[in-house]
Length: 185
Image (tube, rainbow, N blue to C red; front, side, top):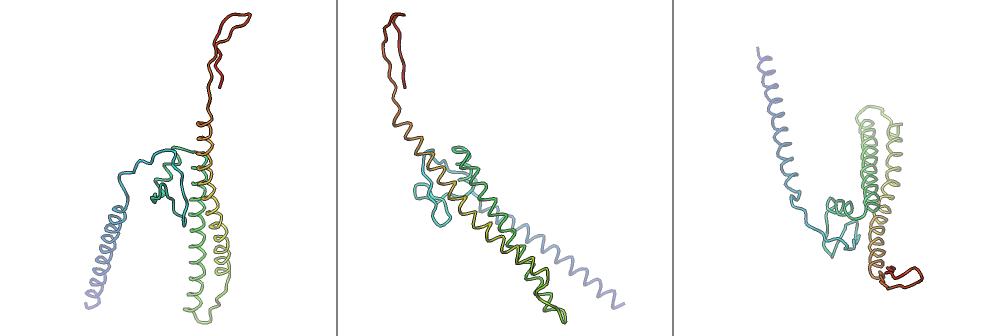
């Protein structure tokens, strides 16, 4: 009979711990959702973007990545696609780095816990390959991000040059066919 009471207490503890995990996940989701901005600021078009320490600035004000993404999507699609490629490289490189680290650490822990376990097995080697690959993927991310900013800023320069050099002439022309207006630009 003692074992039945003990089993009941064990089930009760498991039930309480499950409830505690669910409540903590719910609380965590509320806290993480509270960090997002509901109102996006209006960024005037034609402003140059500066990249300092992997952060985007417009008029010396740091702009979050989701607002930069929307701004580039509205103003320059080529820069927007480069920006998305940089973000995708970041996600993929982080995934490779995390997965490789987990494989290395799990293999090391398995070798420590088991008697006579060998550490550098195929699992650790594949983890090292994934970590090495992630370094090259993450390195390319910064180049793509800089290329997106440069593409956008260069697009602004060419647009402003076109606006400043725009000349339109309207002339009255007379020839053997008659009178007319000539518009040249």
